[in-house]
Image (cartoon, rainbow, N blue to C red; front, side, top):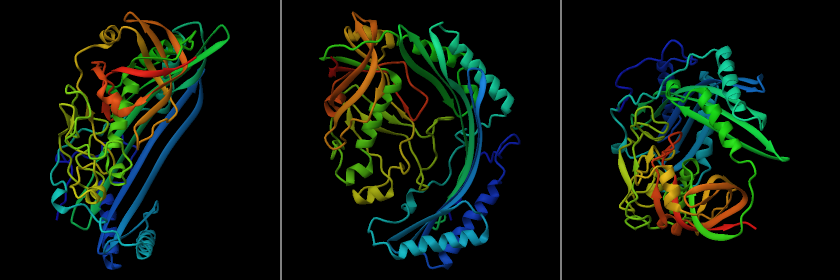
Length: 458
C-alpha cells in the first residue's frame, strides 16, 4: 500500500477556516473505495476536499461586496474493466456516498470500453514527498480586509486627478485541503492557500476614458506587495493609457510585456499537451526532439518550488512530479501528459494530469528598458483581447493595446489594433526574453521580444 503525506506532518493551524480534520477526509476516501469494490468496481479513485475563503470588494471607499465561501465535495471514478463512470456529491453522509458510487457504476455500465482508460501506472505513483510550504492561512478579519481594500483603492485614486472612477479593490483569502486515493493503494493529500489583492480604476481626458488594473497573488500573504504599491501600480498603468490612438497597418517588432508574454508560453503548453496531440489538433504534432524555439530558449518545469503557485508533489492521478527540461536548446524535450493521453500516444505519464507545474523561462539578460532599446521602433503590447488562435494551424490574431516605441523609448499609447502571425514563426522569431519576470501564475517568464509580426490598424 502507498500511503503518503506531508513528511513534516504539519497540522492545519488554529487560525484556519477549514473545519474537517485531515483524518476525516482520509476516512471518507477509504470508505468510498470500499463501497466501490463491494459494488463490483475493478478499480476506483476518489478525491475528498474542503475549501473556504473570504473576499471583500470596496468601491469608492464603500463596501460593495462581502463574500464568504465554504464548500466540500467527494468525487469518485469507477472502472468496470475499461469502462469508466464518474459521479460527485457535496453530501458526506454514508447514504450519499453509497448513492454516488452507485451512480458512477451505473454510468460505467453504459459506457463503451476504452483501451486507454484506467488508473495511473502503479510504478509512477508518488511515495514520499516534501512539504512544499503551500499552506499559509491568512488570519484576516473582515474589518482588516476592508481597510486593506480601501488603502489599495485610495493609492490608485491618488495617482492622478484624471482618475475619475473606480471598479474597486478586492482582497481575497482562500484555503483548501484534499485527499486523493485509489485502489492501487495510494492515499495522499495536503492543504494549500492562495491570497490576492487587486485594483482597477478608470481615467478620463478629453472625453476619452481608459481602464487598467494591477494585482498580486501568493501562497502566503507576506509574499505579496503592499496594498498601496498594488493600487499605485493600477493607477499608473491606467493614466499612461490616456490619449491612445491607432497606428497604420505595418510589419514591425513586437514586445509582449511579461504579463501577456505568459500567454505565449501557455499556447506552447497547450500545443504539446496530450489532448491536442492524440486528437491531432495541434500545430506542434510530432515535435518531440524538434527545434521549435531559437537555441537560447529553455523552458524548465519545477514542480517542487516552495510556495510556488503551481507547485505540487503529485498530479491529479497521484503520479509523482519531477523537475525536467521541457525545452532545451530550443528543442522540445517532453510533452505534458496525463495517464490517458500518454496511453493514447503509447508513452508514459509526465505527471501533468491537471496541467503544467511551475514553468521557468530563463531570461537572455536584458531588463525591460534594454528590451525597448533592442527593439528600437515597434509595438509594446500590454493587453490582449479576444481569442484568435487556431490550434491546428498555429495562426494567431489578437486584438491588442499598448504603446508605440520609437528609438528605444515609449512614444505614445496605442489602441484598437490587431497583432497577427503564426505561432511557429513567432516562437522561432523570439529575439530576447527579459529579466522582468512575471511570478503571479504557473509560468514564470519576462517580456518577450519577437522580431516581426503584422500589426493591423488604420
